[in-house]
Amino acid sequence: MQKNQLVELEITDLSYEAMGVAHLDGLTVFVNNALPGEMVKAKILKVKKNFAFAKIEKILTPSPDRISVKLNQWVQTGLASLAHLTYQKQLAFKRMQVVNLLKKAHLDSIKVNETVASPKEIGYRNKAQVPVRMVSGKLEIGFFRKHSHDLVPLENFFTTDPEIDRVLLAVRDLLREMKVPAYDELHHKGEVRYLEVRRSRATGEIMVILICLHKDFPQLRKLAKAISQISGVVSVVLNHNPQKTNVILGKHDYLLAGKAQIVDKIGDISFSISPKSFFQINSLQTPRLYDLAIKQADLKPSDVVIDAYSGIGTIGLSVAKHVKEVRGIEIIDDAVRDANANAQLNQIHNASYVTGKAEEIMPKWAESGLQTDVIFVDPPRKGLTEEFIKAAVATQPKKVVYISCNPATQVRDLQMFMDLGYDFHEITPVDMFPQTPHVESVTVLERKK
Image (tube, rainbow, N blue to C red; front, side, top):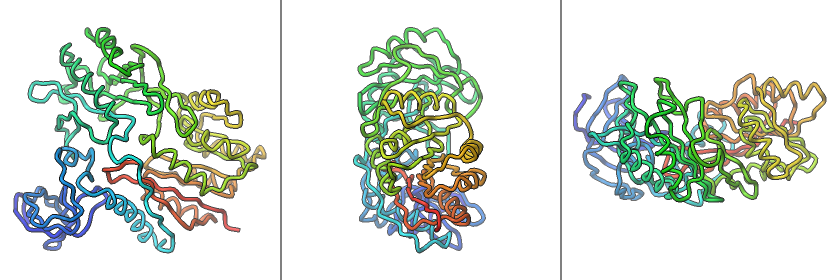
């Protein structure tokens, strides 16, 4: 098999990255935008020792589950790499990801429930972060083509709230009008690297964050004032990122106009959101995710709960009314401040938050006589550390509720909990990100009797 060769392929599966999978001449071939059951004519793009990448030249036999996508850039950029697959099949694909991971770990006996569908399939994201670049001499916003730094200009981001799209385009037009230079990553010059827009579904408040190479430039004051006059915008912030890096956000934020925070809700709990606050992206699905976790945990009014990786308190404050006490731990000081402020905002008096590493603080609490009943964890994609798991088990909670945004690391961690005396019997996938391959999953571990 050689680069640029044309081949006919039968697509038999989908990879975790939502690429079609085919087999030819002993190689696994990954084909972008292809679906199981399809016959395609494809062009080989890259050949490695055991696998190859290809792109579709022509679909010979389309899948009955294929949706015609008018704006194919959504699929090409990975912004919505499952947009060409029916929603019911997307849910089934996400469930199978979890099933296959458990099977690999020899945990076939674990029940995998049906994927919990999102109330909205498009336009659900309450936040967008989009690159700003010059394309053919014109400032554009969009998304990078998969595995590249080529910007595909977009005006409709498909999965984001349409109000966010409206504001993104309005800011783009102001940048063009005021001739603010877009960031040039090759020469590390220009001004605006990314635009971030957050919108509260509860209040309609919108925050615009300009992620810039410099913390000041000639047009900044005029630009900030013009952005603050866009309908719905209540906060304009500059995030300063002077580094030559792929990391989007810099360390420092500067308020340019309006309020430093916006307020959103999960269920009946209000949250103040700062520029760097982690807040679940899908506002309508988040209450379902938390309700599921709370229901499966079967919480008692006498329970003492630890909320590890607590962020701004979204899980802990949602749990507080069901239990005696919530103690949250978070390594980011600003998030801890926000979490305690959010407890006050909602007049919740049985939840408190401290800064530190959970694996260091939990043992101290246990030594001081705190009897933990339930630990909630919702870690980043890399999952939990061995140190954390051992510290959690040492506090002897009756249950550990594990919410994960990466089932692969979750299954790895669950095996370690099992080795240390805990069991789980079912797992529920939850679709927080329709049109993408990402899936969250929830399970409850119980201490063996």
